[in-house]
Image (cartoon, rainbow, N blue to C red):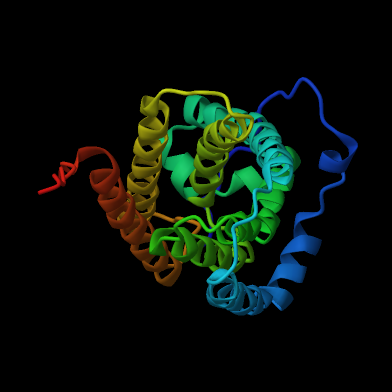
Length: 271
C-alpha cells in the first residue's frame, strides 16, 4: 500500500549539520539498483553457507587462530559504524514520534522519501549486512561454537533487508534504528572484550535482553501496520514475511537467553 499523505512542513528534524554524501543521497537511484540486484543477496548467502560448513570442515583438524589484533580492529570499526548510524537515524524517529505520532512512525515512509540523512544511513544499513557476514569468519578460524541462531540470523537479515529496501517500507524506520542502537552496544562490548577489558556478565545479559525486545518490537510495529485498516507503506506479503522473521528471532534469542543465563548448570562429580 502507499504511504499516507501528510503535510511536508517540518517532516524531518532540524539537523545541526549534514555531510555532503548525505545531502547528495539519491534514493531513487539506489532503489532502482536494488530492484535490479536484490537477488544478489541470495548469491552472497550461498557463498556464506559454503564458508560456514566448508570452513568448519577445514578447521576440524587444525589448531585455532588467535586473530586478536584483527578482531580488535573488526569490532571497533563495526562499533563506530553502528554508533554513527544510530546517531544519524534515531533523531528522525524521535522527531516523527513527537510531531506526528506513533502511527506515522509505523506507516509513513518519510524517513527515506523526504529525509536524505536517515535515507542515506538506511542504505548503509542494508549494504552493511554483507560485510557483517565476516563475524562468522572469526568464529570459524578461532574454532568457537557456531550456533544455528548466529548464521540463520545473518542470512535472513541480509536477504530481507535487500528485499524490503526496494519497497521503501515504513516499519523499516524502526528496524534500522533498533538494529543500529543494539549493535552500537553489542560491538562496543565485543571490542572491549577483544582488548581484554573485564566486563561483568550482566552486560552480555543486557545485550541479549535488548535483542529480545528488539525482535518483539519489530513484530509489533509490523503487525500494527498490517492491522491498522488505514493506508500503510508496506504490502501484506512483506508484513507477514517480517512478522515471521522477527517471531523466529524472538524464539531463538529467548532460547539462547534461557540456556545461557537461566538454565541450571549440572554439577558433574567424580565418583
